[in-house]
Amino acid sequence: MDKQFVMKFGSIGDDFVYYRIACDCASENCDMSLSMERDEEYDRFYINIDKKLRASVYWNSVEEWLKFDWVRVLKNKLLMCWKILTTGYIEVSESFIIKEEEHAQQFIDALVEGRDFLIETKQKKESNDVKE
Image 1 (cartoon, rainbow, N blue to C red):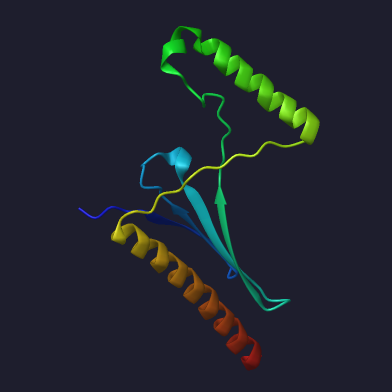
Image 2: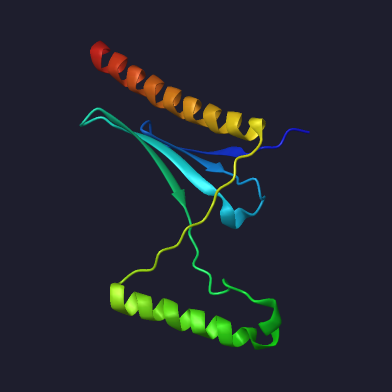
């Protein structure tokens, strides 16, 4: 059975198409969205990749202190709050995994399909403008 890593959600008008790209870990919380749009005014093509990032206070675990884990978690929460108060931001990172050839190919296919959709709709608009 083929896995479906890339799901086309649809398009808005003729200038915007979007997809959901699944992470290899199979968690919906880890997925990202891919959208492509064409800006006719400036004749530009944009690819947007969005991913929800999460900051976790459960990092830096030490096994011998598991019964006092709440202290570590509280300390991490306070450190995160302090960083936000003093700098205005916190830094987070999260991975997105593409490890199978099929997964990579579906990602590439989505890029090509989205690009082709935007090119075809642009050509249809231009041919309709010429006819009028």
